[in-house]
Length: 87
Length: 508
Image (cartoon, rainbow over all chains, first blue to last red; front, top):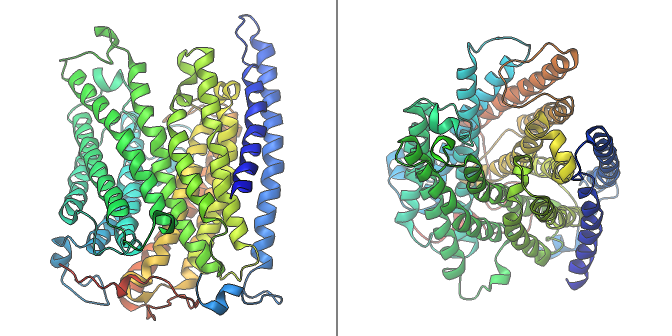
C-alpha cells in the first residue's frame, strides 16, 4: 500500500510541477495578445501530445487485456480465486 | 401491476413501503423515467442544431427552456436518484443491516422527488441549470423560474436526508463483526459522496434563498442595480456544484468496483487504494470550484491555486483507472453487458479526464471558456462515465430485481450503439469548441466546418436515441417475459457473493 501511495505521489508531482509552469504563459503584461495566443496554442498542442501518448498507452493496454483475458481466449484458464469460490 | 417477480405484490404496497429495496425500486423507476424524458429533450436540441436557422424549435426562448430542463432533469432527477436507487438496494445488504438507519426518512427523501420533478417540468424555466444571474433575477419569466428554485430546494433537502441516512447506516449500523476496512467499495463510494453532499449542499441552499429573495425584490445580493454581485452567486453555486461532480461520479465508480472484479473473476487489485482515492477525491473536490470562473477577473494567485487544486484530482482518478486495469489483468473476463458498459465507462472516463487536464490549465481555459469544448468535456463525464457506469449496473441488478434475465444480444447492441454515439457526439463537440462555437446558442452562422460537425453530433445523438429505445424495449419485455434465472448466480460466474433476494429481513 505504501509503495502504491508513494508511486502516485510521485506521479502527482510530475503532473503538477509542469502544470505550474504552464500558468505563467498567461502573463500579466498588456499588449502581447498575439504572442500570448501563440504561446497558449503551443501549450495546448504540447499538452494534447502528452494526453494522446498517455491515452494511447492506457487505452491500448485496456484493449489488449480485454482481448487476451476474455474467457473465450484459447489460453484462458481459471483464476486461483475461482477454485476457492470466493472473490 | 407486479414489479418484483420473485414475490409478486400490488404496486401500492411498494409505493407505501419504507423497506429499503422497495424505496430503491421506486428510486430506480423514477430515475429511469427521467432519463428518457431528459434524453428526449437532448434529441430535440440536437435536431434544432442540425442546420443553421430555426429548424424544429420556434424561438430561442423555447430552446433555452429545453436545454435548461434537459440539464436539470438528467443531473438532479436521473443521476442522483439512480445512485440512491443502487445505494438503497445494496448498501444495507453490504453492511449487513436490516434496512437503512431511518426507513421513514428514507421514504420521505424519495417522495420529495416527484413533486420537485413536477415543479421543474411544469415550470420549464429558461435560465440554464446554473440559473444565471442577473438574468434569473431581473428578466427570467415567472412562475417558471420560481418553480425551478422551489424544485431545486426540495431536491436539495431530499439529497441531504438521503446522505444522512447513508452515513449513519454505513458508520453506525454495519454489522459489529465488520470493520470499516471491510465495507465494500460501493458502500465506501456512498459514504464519500454523502459526506460531500452534507458539506456542499447547504451553500447552494443559501444561494437559492438569496436568489429567490432577489427575484422578489426584497434583497439585491446578486443584482448589480441594487449593488449586488452576480459573481458572488457563481462562487456559491460552484462551491456546491464542483464537489457535486464528484457526488455524481464517485457512486458510478463504486458501481464499476462491483462489476469489474465480479466479471473478471478476481478480487479488486487494491482495496486500500480504492478507499484512499475516494477519500482524496472527496477532499480535493472542494479545492477546484473557481476553475469554472477563470474568466471573471480573478487574481493570478487565485487562479493558480485553483488550477493546482483541480489537477490534484488527477492522481486519485488515475488510481481508480489503474486499479481497474490491474484487477482485469490475469482474470478470466466474461464480457456480459454490465462488464462492457463498465469497461467502456473507464475508457471514456480516461478521455474525459485528459480533456479536463487541458481545460484546467489556466491559459487554455481562456481559449475554450463557454465554447462547445466545455459541453463536450462535461458530457463525456456525465454520459461517458457516470451514465455508462449506471446503465451497466442497471443491467447487473436487473436479474436480482426481476428474477429474469434481459436479452443479452440487445444489451450488447445497446452498448455498442451508445459507445459509438457517445464518441461521435462528445469528441466532436470538443473540436467544435476549438473552432469557436459558443455553447447555449439557438442559431449559428453557416460556417461549413460548424455545419459539418453539428451534423456529426446530431447523427451521433440519434444513434444514442435509437439505442435507448432498444434498451427500453428490452427492459419492459424482459421484466415480463425474460428467461427466469438462478438468482444465486444469474450471470453464471460461480463464486460466493451477497444476493439481494436472500436477505433475511422481511418487508415491513
